[in-house]
Image (cartoon, rainbow, N blue to C red; front, side):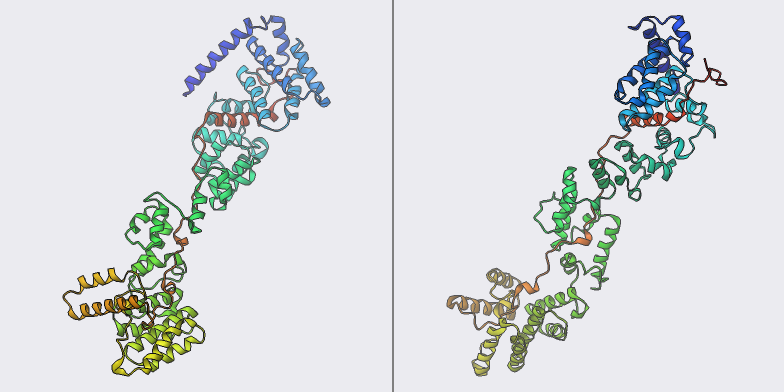
Length: 553
């Protein structure tokens, strides 16, 4: 609304009130009454009618049992009965100051000062009158002189005047830290949200600690410090994001929308590499950089310690990295598991020389967990068995048998083989492993068919696959697998963890705004509070119209 439109609207309201004052239910205000009201600083029939309405509302809102305010109430009643006096102003001020703090009191004070402004009553100091005109929108704020500006907390105790002007100028950056501390406890949530979106109010101000209402405290906490909101608090706000994040990280079953953040993170957990670009678009900048570190480290198989520290990244790292040489298990838990898996893969691929180099690094690793050490020595014994070095194989397993009974079947196999003449011994390889599968895998037939198709031009490989098929079928017929060297002892020892990547999961984002920007009710609340803060500028006796003298009689 332009200034000209505001002035025209004010003139129309004034004309309507003047008509109501002269011909309304209260009857015509005669000249004698008008002269009496001048003693109280009220000039004109329109102003008299306006003041009488305000005084009746003020009497209706006061505490009738408060004896300390009886004089003020009596003074106002006398004025309404046709005996207005200059003592009206201190009576009005006393009643307004005595009211309990709250929105109702602010509205009542604002109603009184709004009437003072609209009726043109000389009840305020010049500075207060000037600021009131600016708050009401009748004068531009640019007209404020140095002496007219509120001086600190005393003249703008709630920061409402500064806030109202900042909102009017759409320049919230001009608010100081002092203003924000005074504004945060009372401003409407819509205005607080405006301050948050403008970057003026942030988590360092902790506005949630300044609100009296618990629901508003929770709302602001979710807006500015979402990581401090647990699932229960978020649920009370009807906000699902923190609960979904907690469930995801806890490994609970989730059914995210395809292509959503948690859907892509689940696929990364499973080691899918074709979703990395898509995931980058949904991650904040710092996590995009972390994801790129994961991807870049796969070029050399070397990552900063904080990357493999997140076990939820291991599947992705293994999908991105294929070791080309023996892995040193002493580098850490991730590398130890990769080394074990690499050795097993090489055995299944028939790469016995490379497998031997990897297994030797594993058995030389003194700090390996017991289950890893058992698997490593079992692989070592198997490779020795394939080379027909039965004594080395037996000694290797015997050292593990002291603490791990799972190798007893393999030890018995070695013992039987040592008692059998060399020419009477069967081929030592485990047929499942020859097909590239764990011992007693139920998928051996499908794997054999795949091998037959792949190796149809290589007679040696095809013959080896057919031998494996016959040996497995014979074992299944007799239900006797005792002549097969069991490797691995426990397939679970070679499995990658299925935990979710905590270090790639973004922190809970701030709860979206739930208030309306620039709501009329919010702006009215700020305006009322700014008017109410002008109460100290209400005089004890009205000024004369020329602003130079006060009436005393």
